Image (cartoon, rainbow, N blue to C red; front, side):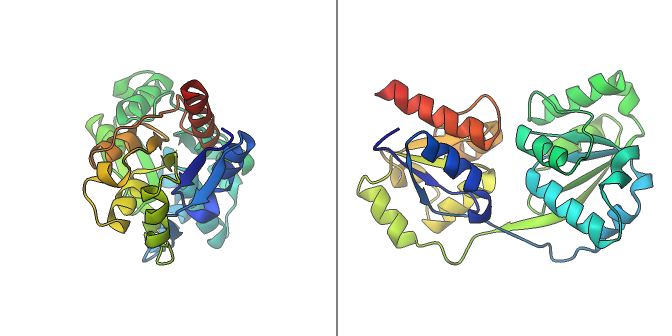
Length: 263
């Protein structure tokens, strides 16, 4: 990827792994963070859930951010990761599973597919059938603006699902639109990476554009997963690059492979 420039829209404090992987392939990395991770308006619901883990059969994490913030509040109420030993844990995505492993939290299920039907199918298989999900209690810590597809699908299977806000994603005030726009218009960017639907939405807000096809004309679009790709499609963007696994390393590899094939 020598001579190629990739724009990373991930939150700056979380972009290190992706940036390092891209640079290892020879790319030049530009940061244009479109999200910032901040605390929820209140930690009360999350703290209450952390204090009463005995009331849940399952914990479902769909991002490393959710893991990070949940574990922080677990510590804040005087508990540690060992408290999770009696709860089944589902980790959606490699990065989520890795973060749990780092914290020495056991993971019972890592679905092969991150879409709602894939997650529920994996849980059904583990439980021994869809009917065995009925009546089980799931705790779902997530972003304030998270999608309801997985909780809804579990509810349809007869499970009880409690969704609690672990963190919020907001658009940073410090991102320099003029600089980013000059680079894009001037042909200084070969590829833009999106790592969540929020990065797509906030990128569109940054440029005050519902249709991002014009903003990113001539620029390749890389999305970390299908959910992010669907968000991009909602802004008239086609994902040119979509890794098989939903992780920063896999995304960087997919970008490198794409440009290697492009010559």
